[in-house]
Amino acid sequence: MSEFTDGYVDLLIKQYWDKPNARAEIAAQSATWETVRDVIADFGNVFDLDKATGDQLNIIGKIVGLPRDRVEFDLDEDYLFYLRIKIAKNSGSAYIVSDDRTSIQDVIQFAFNGLAYVIDNKTMAMTLYLLPGIDPVKVSFAVQLDLLPKPQGVRYIIIEAAPGVNFGFDTNISALGFGRKNISGVTEGGGLLAREVFV
Image 1 (cartoon, one colour):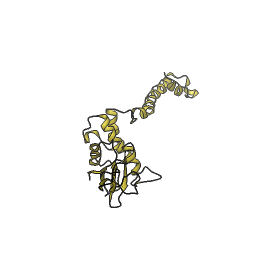
Image 2: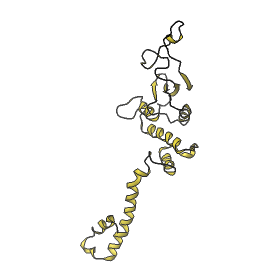
Image 3: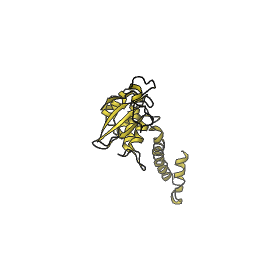
Image 4: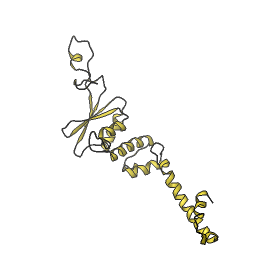
């Protein structure tokens, strides 16, 4: 018997203390309880998103609403990328910034490792700026799967941009001016136009 089972057997009252059937009954039941306890105790490790692979990821996908059979994900790494976004979206709010819940901005920052940010255009559209290092195909797929968080009825405009390289207005401290690049005789560098990837 294990320490767990011994602990339950030791709880027998005096009336049944020396009865072999009572001791055997408690030992058998506590062995089942111990198995259940071990499964529950190890659940966090088995389904840890950072360690899960294969069937474990498939189960997590079904739980969060992105089953693997919905779309073919050949690599666990790719599937894990979309699962992380889905989980963040499920737990987030519909606000661009929020004090008490995970905001849309938080989800976008988390999903793309700080290489993307979103702004509200206040026109029933939000612009998602992708910095270098993000695969636009993955972003496109995330949009197709409706994984990026947004208020109902709002659409995304996706822009590839690079801070300190692209043209922008003076309210954006990461942007360069337009005129310096495009006025003849001015040699100082100016910004390049960002590229709209898809809407």
